[in-house]
Length: 120
Ligand code: AMP
Image 1 (cartoon, helix red, strand yellow):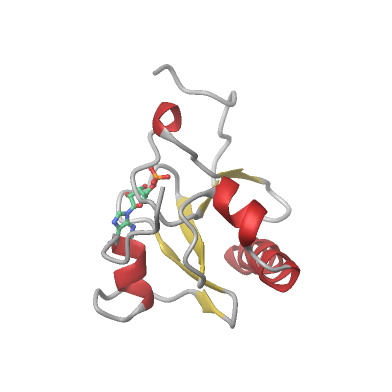
Image 2 (image 1 turned 135 degrees about the vertical axis):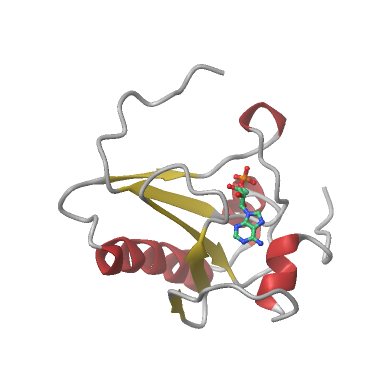
């Protein structure tokens, strides 16, 4: 799948749509999910143009991959959920309900999250 520059996270990264920036560096931007599913629900998106985890893993540079995952762990710590725990979700493809075709990770926490999968 080719990257679509009109996706909502691309527009946020370009500053065309506002977001509450929680963290930003050369590799990633973090902001709250607009429809939170837990007391803490933050999205971390890489700055590069990657459709999915498959695309990111296969074509991003080692620096981008390291930078992205360092940003994710930094944000979890910044959010205060490192000790209480959190879940990292990267939806990929139709079965996962990936809605936005720009690779991203959800950080969910702030309460006991229960088992891995909610009923579909
Ligand atoms: P996914 O299903 O993994 O693609 O998740 C996309 C997420 O983006 C959903 O949880 C949406 O609530 C969230 N979302 C969509 N538009 C925005 C926005 N403008 N700002 C913040 N989160 C958004």
